[in-house]
Length: 332
Ligand code: ADP
Ligand code: NA
Image 1 (cartoon, rainbow, N blue to C red):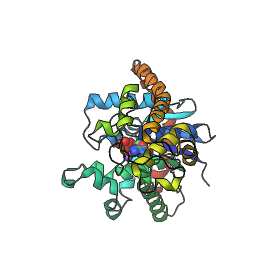
Image 2: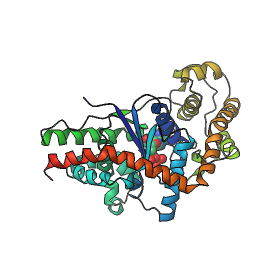
Image 3: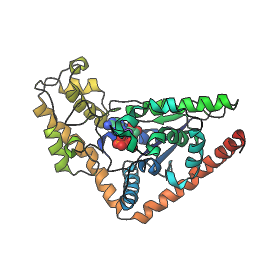
Image 4: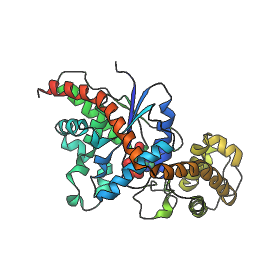
């Protein structure tokens, strides 16, 4: 049996969105006090699977770390570090490139989305990304990975890689990691199009709330968010087939900590013209302190770097023996 351990990561590939916050960071913070060891990573090696300007990458790495800290991650309670500073990720990633099958990688829908029509021009790293993600997780024998719904397929691949490694080498060395996909905000949708997920890579800034948006920007985006002509239903089934309405209710639920049914019990019967200002107040109330704290932390980059350096020492202390044992099992 494996000791429960939580691992997750976010790419420093642009500004954080409300989707990253509700689908990932807020849940990382909740798990931090669960008594289970929690390890959270800035996955810069994943970010460079698509072009990143070096100065921008350095800044985004610090900004994401500031976002983690400002949201309540405590470097005493959780290990916070940057992926490229722990060489074991690349080393185990290579071994897993040799375990994963091409057929498995060909089924990854995120590669198809990100590579677009011209897949010939995508980097080899973008294609291999899920095998590196398996290494990120299994380098710590992590048993639980809190993620948004878009990452479910990659965690399943991690299990396939662990199972094939264990089978091929006749061992039980790697755990079968569980994705933890919970809450009302496992898939926050674009504010402009209820069929697309909210993403930092969406060309329309109005489609997302950025964690660095000020109160005016948040208010404007929520006021302009697409909805349908009907008001709020008083029961959850009244949200069926209404993705934009459902999304705003889900966001309210996740930010307030109330269940979707509780939100509807309170707001059912209201028009969106009345509900949106309530959502604006709630969002500003929850997000403004985080963006203020992020800005404050960003004034001292040396302190952020020191936190990441200390975190990578702690990460290495767990990873090194697991990597060494993996090498032994493989015959290296
Ligand atoms: P992005 O998709 O914004 O580039 P990442 O791939 O780095 O971000 O994902 C970081 C975490 O945020 C993952 O756990 C992912 O599932 C989660 N996440 C990203 N977008 C959303 C969203 N719209 N709703 C919920 N969770 C999301
Ligand atoms: Na993602």
